[in-house]
Image 1 (spheres, rainbow over the protein chains, first blue to last red):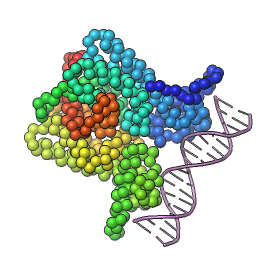
Image 2 (tube, rainbow over the protein chains, first blue to last red):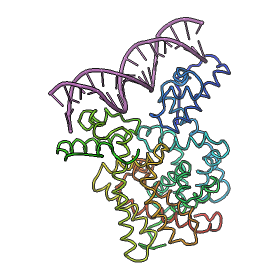
Image 3 (cartoon, protein in one colour):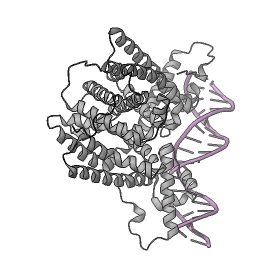
Length: 228
Length: 228
DNA sequence: GTCTATATGTAGATAGAC
DNA sequence: GTCTATCTACATATAGAC
């Protein structure tokens, strides 16, 4: 989660307003394109065109394509981590922690931002789904998300003192992948169920799904083939 | 991207043994590289080098890069669908269907192939995870996986006559994403739990997780904030 | 079927004028 | 900071000899 950007390391004077706009426009455009077409599917030229600036300004402001990509992933990851840990602390302060509460503290901040701030956060979910599945970005993923994930796993593990930590961790990874599936594949759920729907109402269903799954994974296996 | 492979449409004579080997080597090499680096991150030249054949043979045998990619995704998808539907039929024939049994019929064939036939099937899981998350391959995904998915959703929905089909479908999509997370991110689970493990033992845990989740999602919401 | 050679386009990154 | 022009490398795909 340490994200030194080399281009900024020794900035001498305050940048002009226009320069700041340019830099922000490049970041937003790059986020949209990377999310839609992937890292290799997006060119520096595409980004310049989308941001309506010269393509050489992309390298000038943000260095190499890899550095730009890492910058995009980390800026929202940090914001998300803060919101998630704050929600977790608030939940703990409210009384005895519950699994539903912990999961809501993790899922909620993203869902809220995706609904409030709109398409940029939705694009970001696709970006996270991509980097999570790609070994090329393993280090980046670990830096951005693992510290917070460990804290949430700790919190859940505290609810199941008798459970193996492996099982809790596995359940948490499954839960995160389910959240990404919700965020990136509403079209898929809609297509399979013949009825698209809004996002917020899915949060509670997602929490219900994951909480039941983690509880089942944490407890010793019940009678085999229990049926429905 | 229409399943016809132009190069094969009117083959006149039986191909030589060497030609068959070349064609198979290209497919396997392409599968490894596409899975490791993605579609845009893999070049035809890379594939030729990996298969130890001339890169022009890649186009000659399999047409364009897109056609080659679609061919790779579909060949194993068809094999998987057959195995899954066969397992589902066997389970139904065995007596009253159960959720655990249906999920095992869906997950089992992949896990078995990944363990038995090894790395090519593991690469394939990463490939499926990629195409599932990428709008560029939406049509390909629908053609390959949706028909079978619908049948499994039907089978699950029959166990919960009172549930909304949307909730079943959502639970199934979450379950599939969890399976892909297991197949592609063992390193992630291992890193978070400080203890990597073998794959087969995870199948039962995965089924347990998903069955509990789907059951919870299918039933009307219980008392709010039920805790652990 | 397989090879060499190549046509044609685009990639990331930078140099240097303003 | 911004722009034009360009260097160098590599991409997909094909033509044509063997």
